[in-house]
Image (cartoon, rainbow, N blue to C red; front, side, top):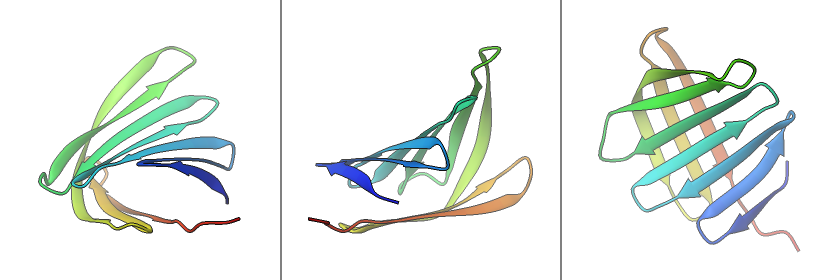
Length: 102
């Protein structure tokens, strides 16, 4: 899918979910905004543990989810994140490849 990159921010839509990503030298903030939910992650190279917040829009109920950052790579053209949701012991990978399109 195609997105918009403006300095250290990337925005795109995939499967009716809007992704907003803020990229810094040591961390990445990822916000997934769907019709029914908002899911926020902060991944930090210097912290193994983090918390993801999951908000269910219909009843304004939010839940904090403990996550362990297994791998985080931040380059000019690739963001790679591998993380574990502690409560379910499920591992997820997220890879964003960026390139200029004219």
